[in-house]
Length: 113
Image 1 (tube, rainbow, N blue to C red):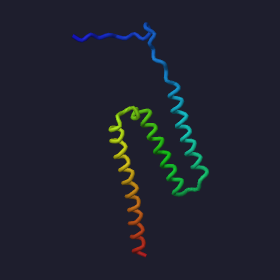
Image 2: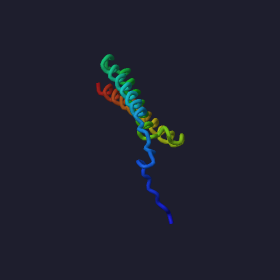
Image 3: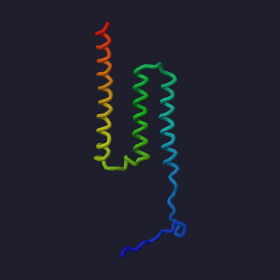
Image 4: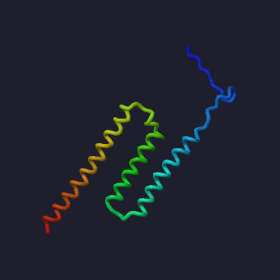
């Protein structure tokens, strides 16, 4: 039969230390990325460059959040690539569809002029 041992952390003094240093580091990195996003949002004119910078910074924040809070950075490399590669392909698909949609819209509007 299996034996079950209950652990009483208060009796042995083996309470794990809080990881406040990691939490504050993560907090300041995310605050810094958000501040850079706001800096670009309020200092640059609206356009493709500002949107591209916004998208890139947002992707960096998303990858950092996934790596830290979902513990993906501690996983096997094969699992990381099995998540990142399809995500990159979906992003490429969205860019391709936007480009094709713009071409189609331009060709239709020019045809009826």
